[in-house]
Image (tube, rainbow, N blue to C red; front, side, top):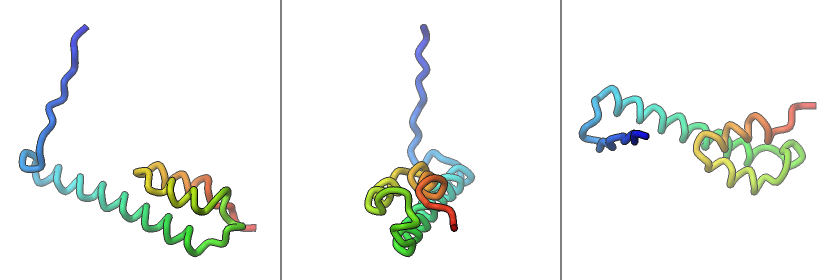
Length: 78
């Protein structure tokens, strides 16, 4: 079977468009993390499924953590 090798490129080899896209992706990750941490800090423990400390740690998992918290970790109003 043939092997598929992906050439890694350094920052200088990326086009301006690619650098901009990576910057946007990074910014979105930071904003998701900040929003999750702020919500965890302000939300009462009774409105969080599970431990707030555990969700704080989970939030640091790129994209998956904050999204999981917003989709699963928060209890709906009621």
